[in-house]
Length: 258
Image (cartoon, rainbow, N blue to C red; front, side):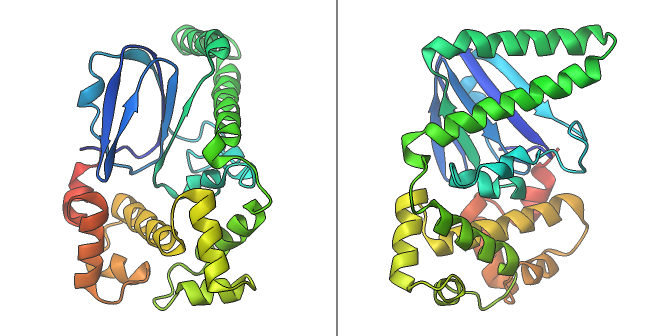
């Protein structure tokens, strides 16, 4: 298992394989595209016989101090996963339709040429091409059946907003979140699970773990301090939660990043 400090987009144009994550595996084949967020641990030894393209969003290519461009937040109603993409957890996966694959591959070829030749205007061209890839990927997610638009999507975004503002509160619960959005516990729980495949408390844990990973990457804070700052006052409980979520301790995670 290893991780990166930046977003990585992988597109596969030949072969079949499998990517392993701490809590599962993802089968990939021709036409599949996977976006991994900063700090996500994964094992790619299962794709060593595949071919394709890798785009690493290193530095401030989009003029921001994070590798996540604003467009990953712009379409949260269409694809709820995008609302949390900037926080550095999880991965997104989609399949490019057969008729669109030639267009995707032309983008990669052009991008490679711009990087290699470093001609006049290459920086602007590279930025535009990378942005275009993410727009196309966002559209794939938005139209995926499991993540498509529905009349419940605004509530999903509201819940995400509450979690974003208050995830560090030690006592934050489903009851408190439901109260904040003016709905019942049962209704909020049902909508989140049906729309995203995860419960409210799973999303809360994911957000806390994302912030913990960020702090492990970007600071020298003690693990116990990090746990407290993401809502876990008991360092032993935080250690157990992190181990369960990542398959390794927080200290081992910090060592695994590069």
